[in-house]
Length: 247
Ligand code: G3P
Image 1 (cartoon, rainbow, N blue to C red):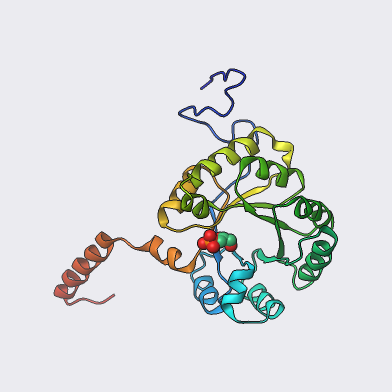
Image 2: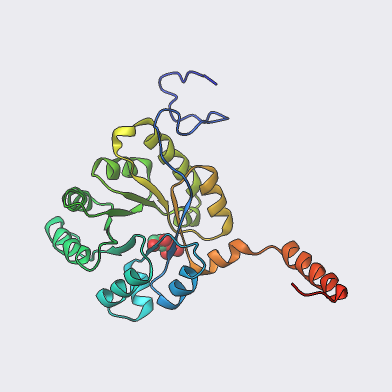
């Protein structure tokens, strides 16, 4: 399929859109992270084999009531995938110092930095160390472009919080996907959809080709549920009982 996009219309919607047109993008699957610092929830989900990583933030750490370093260290032992741990400093040098401390906790720590100019400066330094960086609190395509240029492994657009103020969070995912796919040399920053509130967010993110969804435990559980599955299983079990057989 081929089409031309007139200059000045690059942000216009074209249907059907073809993602990964010129990128050689290597996305193989939608990764599932859990957005929590509750180790009981993390253990339960890790046991399903569905969990690829964990994200935390200062609010989730506060909710856990636990020591930050201790809880991140424990999560890193439970889940081999990336575990995002967020700095608390707001000035670049202090962010770099904190980020390096967090990176020393375990190999699989991804340092989470806010999308500010200082955060981007720290992102470059910490990425250059060889540490994975997740740039968080992204609310615009321009911010996502900057994070990729700063070397972030992950960009975290907050879809739910955009929906909360009457905007459409999924439009942001669509825009970021387009921008990243336009420029393979941006370095493969992964779109980590955050602030997810419902299974519909996850499905939309997958349709748009997002790389990762970080999902609250309650929404992960909702993803599996369907009343027709329950009803169907009940019927099968009833009929099976009538056969008097066992496997
Ligand atoms: O961890 C960042 C993000 O997922 C927070 O979500 O629900 O507080 O907007 P929420």
